[in-house]
Length: 334
Length: 157
Picture: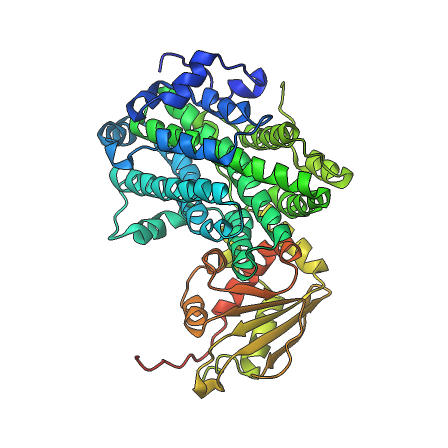
């Protein structure tokens, strides 16, 4: 970790070009080497292949090369940083954000198997790998909360129960919707329209927009301050996993629309519901101790959404464009 | 004072009154005013009806599945009644939950997790339209959970 840029620098810099060497570093680093990888490069890497999306077998082969052992991480320095170096304000902000991931990783793990019933055999391999990734990410947060934050519990659900008070009431919009969409697929696993609506929420919004944006907040803080090395390593490796998930999900949506152009209506309808709720806040999260403002985080959401839609060639209906303009903050001075 | 039986018409009347009154001051205090402004905006214009089912209502209460029907209009509940087992169920959104999960909600289990963990599921209705009012629904579900009622203890299996 040699570079120490402001956490929000990427908002003003715009897309960055990755050299072949940087791409190799991201793709080929073993877990210990991930500590040296810049999170902004990993997020850029997500977009690198969106215009020429890799096929599902390629993504599965990448998974086999990139999977990591969550039990190899050593959180002892993180515990020292958490207890002795971070301020109370930093800890409160950090945990308010991380708790969304703690519960979000669990949700995307358990709601994905039903999506595996419908697709091609190649995509099934990719989804099976993704389910294993999400289970590992769930364990990653379980370990972080036990070993660094110090929550106590006999099992994974007990730790989830203990961190739930930090989860915002608005969490239910994307993740409750995902649970209900999964149930819709459970009843009709081959309903292609229901699959596209599910994929829009899961792959485009939850993984492609929410996760990648908010990951960046805690990771750029950790990198900026030089704190929480095991968290940075594990969560940056998680972000590399997410790049495969987002690329696979975008490939699925792109293929669905190419096969049946009316599927764009399912994507738009899903985004209408999501965007109508995305401007509502139930509690104030203070991002400032981590180097961000709430406006900057929301702006990051919408930058991520627009980039993904543009990269995979999905346009917005005029009313959605208007809705996006209304809920999208303007970056002061940006 | 004896409490009405869960899924009795008296309980349905109490639910209607509780929903008309809305979340308690204590519930409101923990969340931002702008969240409650959104809640009130949805409540004021919500035109739909819910049929909230108990899939396995205990035999002491008439046996299941039975539904609590709630019609919204003009910012309040305009109709609240129990749909008996076997009677036709017609509502904008039909949802169902097991008796033990209803009891857990009454005992304080979180309403958001009741949805997220698929304890209560949408059985009929447009999912994307339903979710446009999800914050309103979850807060109302939490209110319903607080309405006093007698829940018979099930015999151990």
